[in-house]
Image 1 (cartoon, rainbow, N blue to C red):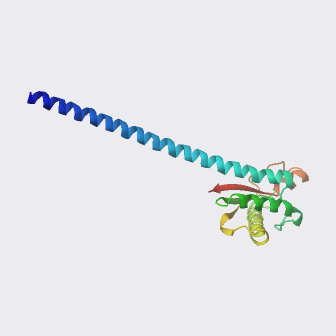
Image 2 (image 1 turned 45 degrees about the vertical axis):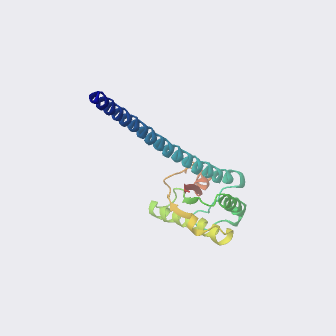
Image 3 (image 1 turned 90 degrees about the vertical axis):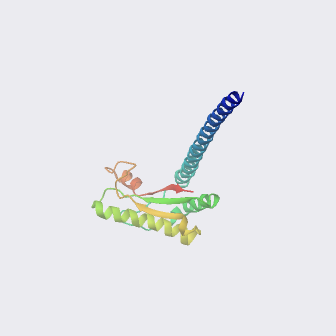
Length: 169
């Protein structure tokens, strides 16, 4: 009788241990799936706000620059107002301003000019539109990411631009 009780106790503990191990595995799987879902949702949110910022430039007009210059054209103010409004709608998001140039001139000079253009847009948004400076950063790409052919003046004008990328929330 004592032997039967001992066997039942051992089986009970073994089954209980397997059940707990299975339960722990399921909990771990749930945590992993939760983390994956959160990461996917975050990427989706970053992408959605980035698309809104790009759409503004399509609707209100791009932020353009003259050859060799880094001053924001005052004609771009309506675009800047819309960019600032989107940023106000998403207060926890950080936006990188990506500066670009055409391929006229030396690559090193274009890299500096693109950084200067991105910095100029950040300064404009901070100084004139009240966006918090810690929510913006600037990065120059020079002539490395054209969106149009640099063989025509029209293409070069399109490549003298800035883009906006939401980098974190």
